[in-house]
Amino acid sequence: MTIARIISVNFLSSTDGDGMDEQGILKCLMLGSPDDNYEEHSLSKFGLGLKSAAFSQGEQLEVISSQGGGQFNKFVISLEEISKLGKYMAGSAGSQTMTSNSPQSI
Image (cartoon, rainbow, N blue to C red; front, top):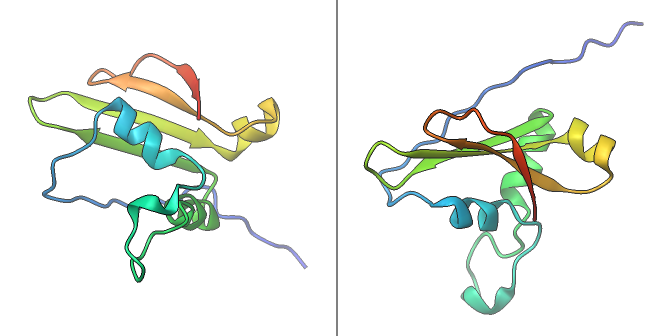
């Protein structure tokens, strides 16, 4: 029996919110979150939903966000890189031109 593996799955989620700066994206990509910012019956309490959902569908998570003015920030988490480096980290793909690759531990 041959088992096929999906190489690429793309999902796009967009909002009309305020966007995130670099620190906001890094915070969103952290594993876990303190529960002092959540109401008793709120969703998203544990800080694992985005990462779990993304990695259940593919091997790479990219978050791109803008707070306006034409500047976009992009961060990437890759299961392949986590496996190679032995630690969970997001790599910055830079802003607007997205040419830099300087990893940031989170």
